[in-house]
Amino acid sequence: MNRRTQLNEIYADDVNASLGFDYSHMGYWADQSAADKPGASDPTNVEDPAQFGVAQTAYVRHLSDRLQLSPGDRVLDIGGGQGATAVWLAQNHGVEVVVVDAVPEMLTQANRRVHEAGLDERITCIHQDFLEYDSIQRFDAAIAIESLYHIRDQDQAFRNIKRLLRPGGRFCFSTYVSDMRPRFLRTRYLLLTVGDRDIPQLDRYTHAITAAGLKTERIDNVTRFVLPRSSAVLRSEPYFSRLRDYVSDHYGRIPAALLPYFLNWHDRSVRHDNLCLFFVDGCAPKRGE
Ligand SMILES: C[S@@+](CC[C@H](N)C(=O)[O-])C[C@H]1O[C@@H](n2cnc3c(N)ncnc32)[C@H](O)[C@@H]1O
Image (cartoon, rainbow, N blue to C red; front, top):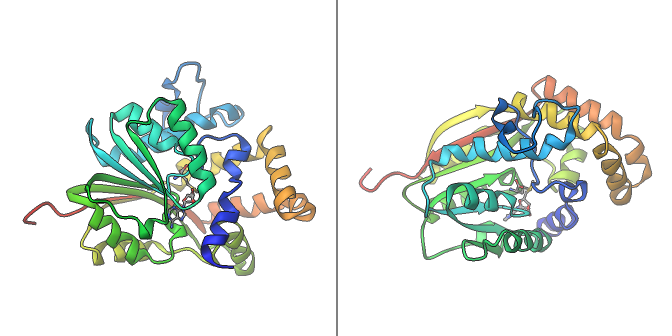
């Protein structure tokens, strides 16, 4: 099975969309700022899973703050999935967004969401592998949320980001780094969730960024703001039942029955720093630099 087929199998019926989430990434619980949405209660309260959507938006806000966006900027959303990030960026920063995603079903959802938000003029969704994407117009910024670890060739990915950014343009991304043990379980887990046997270590990204002629400015380990509470949400109802049904439909009844043990292993890996999430940002050199 080639990578594209694997990716299509994973995202054709995306687990996040099946659980009812607009975004296909985790939530972020750093402070109370996520509570400013009308009707929101305490977003740090994992007993209230309805807050997950607020925490997912907080994740986008915290990461995209690093892009220092201005109204009218042109933003590239790499592996933009269901398009919710693009809609939020356009509505909250007044930017134009191009979403590039390799899986048609994700783009169908993205196009529907963009249309419903009345943002067809400002958001363009393109079905393409990012490594093959090109554009005549340069971008002011690029964002990649939980998507770069799907790309095997990081050198090529960052060369493309460099080519697509204007001089001084900024990029940011979030990504997992995994050293989960035992190894056979990690391999199985990654094959099911990422479609590959392993994902890059952090230095693969920083090396590729430098090799492409870009600069890394900041790297933050945000694991504790994201993973424990996101996992608690998935353990709570109605999400746990939906997740169990999803696993049963896609992988069978035995994996579904083992789901609680799997979540325990996942949480233990997070506690032992064997599964981490990083926010990284940087920029293209300014003209003459
Ligand atoms: C975990 S989802 C994240 C989606 C979105 N960024 C979000 O946070 O909601 C990863 C996305 O990356 C996309 N993706 C993976 N590899 C890609 C590639 N080579 N080119 C473009 N998109 C890719 C997948 O199709 C999927 O929609």
